[in-house]
Length: 426
Ligand code: AMP
Ligand code: GLY
Image 1: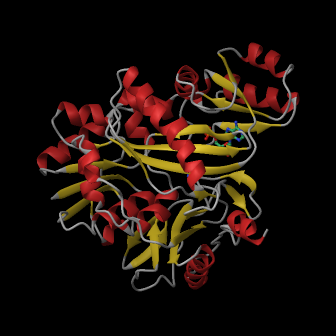
Image 2: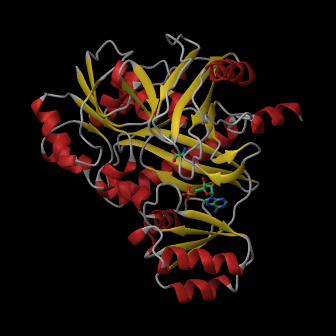
C-alpha cells in the first residue's frame, strides 16, 4: 500500500517511522518532509496547506491513505477535499476541526455537553474585555479564539497585564483575525497531561497518556515553546484518572459531536489539567501532539496502518484492545540558538548516531539533508527518544545520545521528566 504523510516535523517523522513497521505499507511519501524524513520516505515538494496540490498528488499516485500531521490543513478543509474526491484520508473534516480552530466553538461545545473545563466568558470588543478584567480574581487566562501557533493563550497576573494582552490581541492584531474574538477564563492548577484518542465517530480508543514540557527553560520556566520534551506513560494518569477522562471527557465529546451532526474521524487530543476537582479540558487539538507522538507511538505494538484504516473505514470497534510495549519513552528536544525567539539555522549537525536501535531513535524536526550533511533548518531541530524499563532509564538513554550530537548553539532542557521523578521521590 502507498501512504502519504502531510507535514514536516518530528511528529511526521515519527508517524512515518511507525507506519513503515507495518507489513501492509510498501511506499511512503511525505509532503514536504525534512532531512531525516528523506531517508525513510520519498519527500514531495508540496506545502502542507496546498490542499488541491496534495489531493492531485494522491489521486495521480494512487495513494491508499493520506495522514495529516499539522492543524492548518485540517482547518482549511483537507479532509473535505479528499473525501469529495473519494481519496482516503486520516483527518477530521473542517466542521470537526473547529474543536481546535475555534476556542469559542470548543468552549461552548464543552459547556453545552457538560464536559469539565475552566469557567469562561467570550468578548468581541476590547473595551468590554478590559472592563470585565477589572472585576476578576487573578490569575486569569486570556485566549485568542483562532489558531495562533500555540501562542494564543496568555496567563495574566493583574489588570494591567490583562489590558496589555487584550490590546495586543484585539487592537494591535498580534495574531491577525484569530484575535477578533477572545476568551477570558479562570486559571486552573494541577498537572497537565495529554490524552490522544483515535475515533471513527462511533468508537473512541485512548492511547497512553503522556506529558510534555512546554516552557523553554529548566524548572518549567521561560516562554512557551512548541514543546521541549515529553514522556510516556506518566504517573499522573492513574487508572482512576483515565476512567474519569473516558467517562467525563472522551465519551461525552464523541456523543456531543454526533448530536451536532459531526462525524469525527482521526485523532482527538485532549489537553487536560488534573485538578483537585478531577480532570478538566484545557483545549482540544484535532491532530497528534508534537512531541507527544514521539513518545507514544514507539510504545505502540498494534499496526498503525491497520488502526488508521479502521478509523477511516469506521471499523475501529473491530480492532479490539491496543497492544503496548511495557516500557517508558522519553523525548529530549534539541533546539536552535535563540528558540523560541528568532533563531539561527543553516548550521551543520554532527555526531548523529549511524543508525537507530530499538531503544533510541532520533526524530528530525527542523533539518535538511544537503551535500551528504544534515543542517539545521528550524527552531526545534531534533527529538531524541530513549526507551527503557522506566522513565529514568529511558531519559538516561536519550541524554547519552543528546550529549553526542553537536551543532553550534544547540540548546536542550536537562530536566525532562522531573515532575514524575519528583513524584516518585516523595
Ligand atoms: P491552550 O492553547 O488553550 O492549550 O493553552 C496553552 C497552554 O496554556 C496550556 O497548555 C496550559 O499550559 C496553559 N493554560 C491554558 N488554559 C489554562 C487554564 N485555564 N489554566 C491554567 N493554564 C492554562
Ligand atoms: N505538544 C502540544 C501540542 O502538540 O499541541
